[in-house]
Length: 269
Image 1 (cartoon, one colour):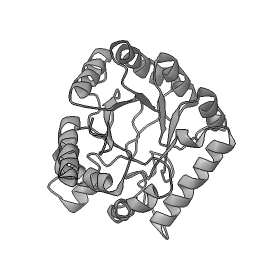
Image 2: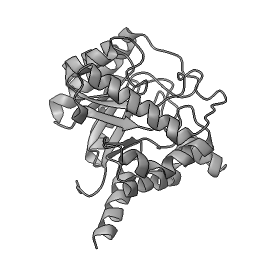
Image 3: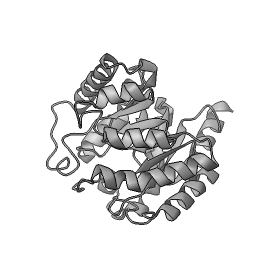
């Protein structure tokens, strides 16, 4: 990996209803094969998810979520030492994932779903991604409003980081994610992307996830399908790289790695 660029986190959704690839990798065998493909394409981290967090998504039981993700994490860990992230809001799923070989807890609820979540994160000793989301997946896109989206997201993320540290999570284990597309309008998302240097300046690694997000179709109405948003995804993640984000979470690993490597090569010429 070119150390001058952000790490690329490849997405493996083992769900029937994710917004971009729901159902495509639902079986364990398909999910494992997809994970191997992303590793071959240059992914630096794999993010495994067993519950969709798309707008309007229905919740999944802890049992079903564990059943979806653990076999894939175990298989990846047997074949590779790549860092594995578990994309879950549930402490019980995070525990099971860490036992299976995951090393990062990526929580779109920023350890808010249950009172014990911050303590569980501290106990696990793993890296933790704290993301901003307005409300919860079922309602987050129902007329989201902010007085100052950048200031409010920044304040939320700092508060969650302090809560995690108060529970015993080491500061160096904490990542922040402004939550592009999670309870935001097109204008809100663009404001957050423009403010990425401000988030980077907070002193925590920043994870940026803009891959195939709906705001891209708000700029280019022809991109109605999630798979039509590669160009917009690359543009957002290149902007993130220029701002200094630590990692980008993407569906299109090969194309993103190539774009980031070319950007880094130009910067180093």
